[in-house]
Length: 324
Length: 154
Image (cartoon, rainbow over all chains, first blue to last red; front, side, top):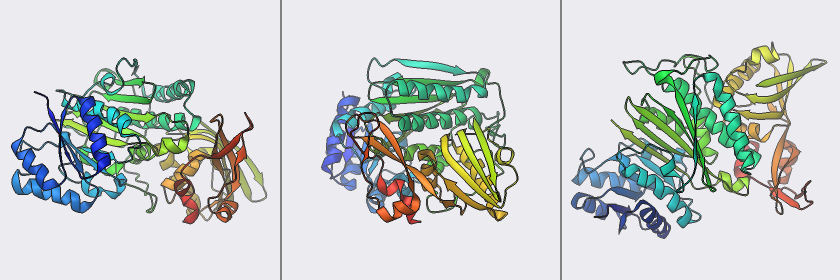
């Protein structure tokens, strides 16, 4: 029996998007227009994926309250890994979403072409239905070649970043796009090299170590970079063997904006806390997959466009998948 | 790697930064003790990562604290993005001029044009078309105006 995707939205564009997601992920689609009806179905049916309109705080609250009032926020029917919120608002304006225990995925409603982006996002959804959502090949068009680069020393990061930029320029990405993607890779690799390593107690090993310090990346500390381009999307994964990603910290960093308030330099930590947020605002989408104490894969996607304006304004999502 | 080319004229030190600003940059070594007036030419800054941003703000805040008159000239698109994303990126300095991105309507080539910020304010986001230096076609502004020029309205 086909697994089910439940769409909770009264918006036509959400429906068009959900149809494509369901097709790409091999799911049957159920559709209701309000959170109350949706939560009734969640309680009665075996729903694999929930795609819910959370355009306003009120709408989200209605959804959360309906769950709390019937199934319960911590019911086994509710799994944040399977809940995808759609919003027209930028991430920094929907703090209520990222702070909710229900948060798993954020989809920005600038679909432009629902068929194309639905197909792309459908691959993400399909990956989340597997026992573990690891592996870049499943996230790109079938047959896309994925190159694997192992980094055994932190000094190899900048070389890897420049290599990605050259690769993208040779694939005819504009220089500004290639630079934005290279910078994203820089942030991903730096996080995998310096933020991911934890000791046996789960404490960060290098939280105060300057990022210019040269470290060998041997054994568990080895970092891999996987790179693929399917003719439409460039995707790069940074992989570590710690599985130490902190969801709350991650989301609070990404959702924070400094355009209106001052950025305060923290000297007690070596990281800057702004890298991933800037990548998201530059047009990148994220898929974070982390299995506690085993492995974390962070993948960034950028669609190639003919003009930078479209690149910046492309369809974006922030997906998380945590296994404990 | 970043390189700094320095020139002192009177009490103004002009520093041209060339390359990528990342974790290895030590501005205190590159630029030295903050002078009375510092002009930073940002034309050739190709990229800046988050650790580079942190170092940048830390250094220029120390300049600000010492009363250095800061000016940022010929800011590359990478630097303009940071100025927009981080409200205190220029640490009360003056952004004198910026590069503005254009894209050719015909051949999609990337171009940049240098504009004084004062002129941009007067234009109210209405930028002229420029000629593509590859095919001679018309090139138009290629970014989101409200975002690329948001620093002008601060």
